[in-house]
Image (cartoon, rainbow, N blue to C red; front, side):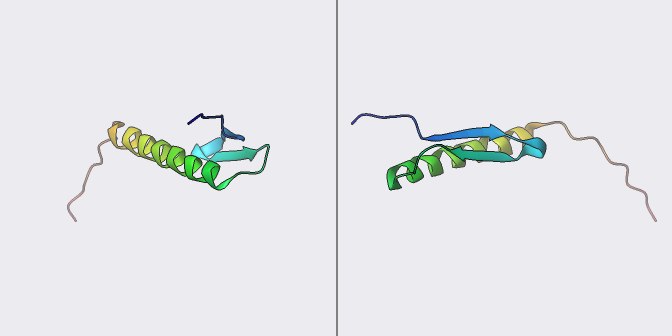
Length: 62
């Protein structure tokens, strides 16, 4: 089985957006590979967000 690069460019945008710029039609296999890639990227972003330190909030008794 040979692999080839996906005919898509992934571009990070503002606010964590991701832009997909296809430069050729996607085959069903391309779509499946892209789905796996995007799922892995989403998981990595979620891990990074959950590992980031969060400022402590002060709770006031009311």
